[in-house]
Amino acid sequence: MAGSDSRERTALIVTVLNEAGTLDALFDSIAAQTRQPDEIVVADGGSKDGTLAVLERWSARLPLRVIESDDANISLGRNLAIRATETEYIAVTDAGVRLEPDWLERLQGEMTTEVDVVSGFFRADPGSTFERALGATTLPDLHDVKPRDFLPSSRSVLFRRTAWQRVGGYPEWLDYCEDLVFDLALRRSGCRFAFAPRGVAWFRPRPSLAAFFRQYYLYARGDAKAGLWTRRHAIRYATYGFAAFVLARRPRWAWWLALAGLGYVRRPYLRLDVKELAWTDRALAVGLIPLIRLTGDVAKMLGYPVGIGWRVRRAWTSRSSS
Image (cartoon, rainbow, N blue to C red; front, side, top):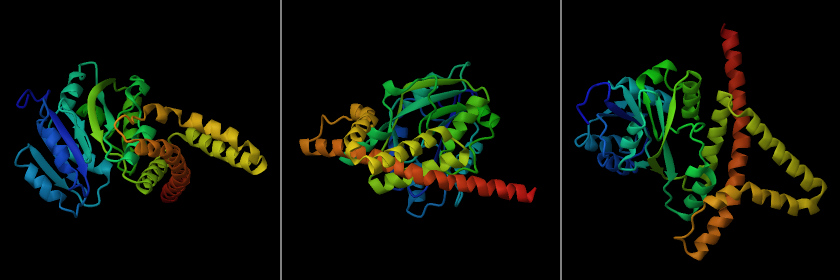
């Protein structure tokens, strides 16, 4: 569809930082798309690992342009890339992703005159038993999704330029959870969403418990900076606080708490696919899920207060300068 009317043209934008090892898989999947993007704009945030050389090589095969903006966060990078495009429709994905061959075609197929934003889907692409357990613990299955309420990840989304303009783009003051804040702004502005469940982007979960801890710490910090999910975080603090109180006062009730914990990890166990694994890896995956859940919760409980502190300082600075 390249060369079609400008109102139907679609740009694909990506932000990268030190992704030399993942870009070939992404661009292989872009080159294989059944519906090719008319433009591809990549915003690089100051890579030092050979990313730019990989992008230069791919620019000979694809309609790809690179914007270099050292130290740009992901929101600024996305906004810069979108501003550099000339199309009505903007598709967004991330480095570290590979796209189904009909990913863009599926998203574009849901973009009617009654729709402003099309939410694609995403699935884990694990490379280890740990990553398989992590994907089952943290990512929804398709049957978990309520299409009317689903907020897209910016690794798999398509929207009109006018929708992006209406909300002022991605929030450049925010370093994490920026796509969620962007989604919520689109909803508040009256944008109409559609869901494309077969527009799938595959991405690899974090490779270690330490990397996962850092990811969820930063996510929770971003939640607090943006003022998101206050009730949800409060419930988490209350639940763990109650469990600690019970263990301190009634240690013999630990079995009841363990049973309650099994209910907490029920959904990840239902999502866990171990058919291809040896029995030792199956046992490892089963044992990892509670540890992953606990690690994620601790990371969130540590990250959220840091984000609150950032908001307080920001409000104080704004008040002092006014």
